[in-house]
Image (cartoon, rainbow, N blue to C red; front, side):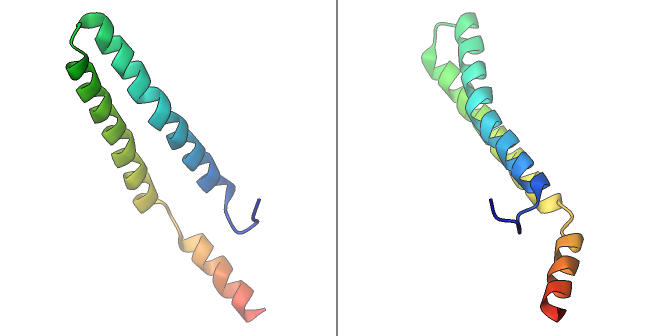
Length: 78
């Protein structure tokens, strides 16, 4: 693994990767138990996937990168 990538970034990526697979699947089958319409189940599962994606984008944009920028500047000066 590259040493330039912080562990927190890898953890967030792994969390959202698992959530992108699990959350829509769980949502699909839970809704499928309530209704027999697969179009409704699929639509709600797609909405669940979009919720996970939007969550990832929000977390990525609000991440504090000032420490990473300071580390890069000190490496360049060395």
